[in-house]
Length: 179
Image (cartoon, rainbow, N blue to C red; front, side, top):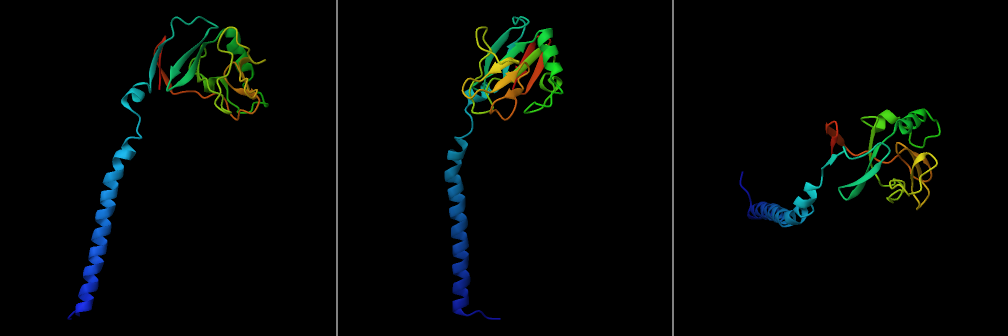
C-alpha cells in the first residue's frame, strides 16, 4: 500500500501537533511547579505544628491558654464538681451538638480544646478568672452570644457545633503533646 504525498503530510503534521502540545504541557508543568511548591507551609510553621505542654503547674479549677498553629488552646484542670456537672448533662436532649463528656476528654481531670468559637471564629470568654462565663459554667462568646458548658459543648446561640478537640496524646501523667 502506497501513501500519497498529502497523506504523509497530514501524518507528519498530526505528529508535530501532538509533539508540540506534549512539550508545551511539560514545560508549563515545570514552570508552575515552583509556584505550587511555594504554597506549602514553611519550616518555621511546620515546627509549630505540635507543642508539648507541661501540665504540672496547673491547679485544679485553673484554666490556661496555650498557642498551637496560631490558635488558642484551652487547657482546663477540671474539679470533681465540673466533671460531675458535665457528666450530668451527657444525655440532655437539648444539646445542639450532642457529645458525652467521655467523648470529649481522654482523662476526666483534663479538658483540652481549641478556643475558637465554631460560629465565626471569635475567641470565647471564660478562660481568665475575671471573664464572664455562661450559665453552664463554661465559655461565652460575646460576638453573637454562643454559650458553652464545662466540657465545651455548645448549649445556646448560633454556633453550629462544640468547641473543637485538637489531636493530642499524653506523653506521661503530666505532659501532653498537641498536634
